[in-house]
Amino acid sequence: DTEVTQTPKHLVMGMTNKKSLKCEQHMGHRAMYWYKQKAKKPPELMFVYSYEKLSINESVPSRFSPECPNSSLLNLHLHALQPEDSALYLCASGPALALYNEQFFGPGTRLTVL
Amino acid sequence: DQQVKQNSPSLSVQEGRISILNCDYTNSMFDYFLWYKKYPAEGPTFLISISSIKDKNEDGRFTVFLNKSAKHLSLHIVPSQPGDSAVYFCAASVLTGGGNKLTFGTGTQLKVEL
Image 1 (cartoon, rainbow over the protein chains, first blue to last red):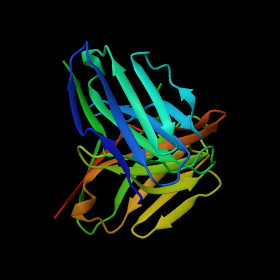
Image 2: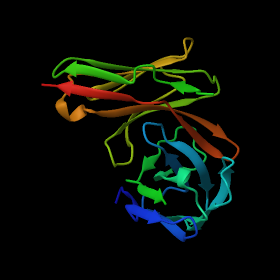
Image 3: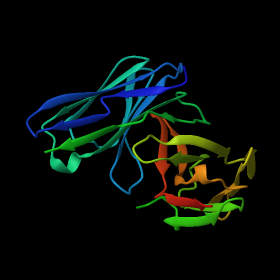
């Protein structure tokens, strides 16, 4: 299995809702990533988990809360989001702390905040 | 501060001809470079990579060239096929204490015409 899967594919939520995005990989990778991509822009790194520990937070607002329950799963908990947080949220996995590191991406979750 | 730039937002090439996509970077700490292909509503798909100690890497129809002194890399696709039509992102990686950080360029929309 060489896939990174993400659920749900689409999500619409209000500004007072709490929701979660899920990501799963079975590639044996020990690093997992969350990226945010706005329309016609490149993906931007949000968080990095290495060996199930949060190792990089790119100054992301606290309304985004990542969680890595085990080496195959990555969640992104969402609370009190703003309409400008509407974007494609991409999960990726790759070798941890490797000099030559290809990251493999899931299909993304299209989030709309009303 | 855009550390990775793709100055051509779009490129149109005839089927069977060569496609050349360019990318420039400013951060000399980048040590690994990757090209990704992205279709709408999908996650980026890894194509090919090159380490900073090499100047060329080839994989089938895809070749990546790195000119470290000029901080420039390019992706050559030959022969180009209609299925190659997509957005192409170059990305640059740096290994930090917290893990690998990937910075994406702005993307080039490639259209291969019959």
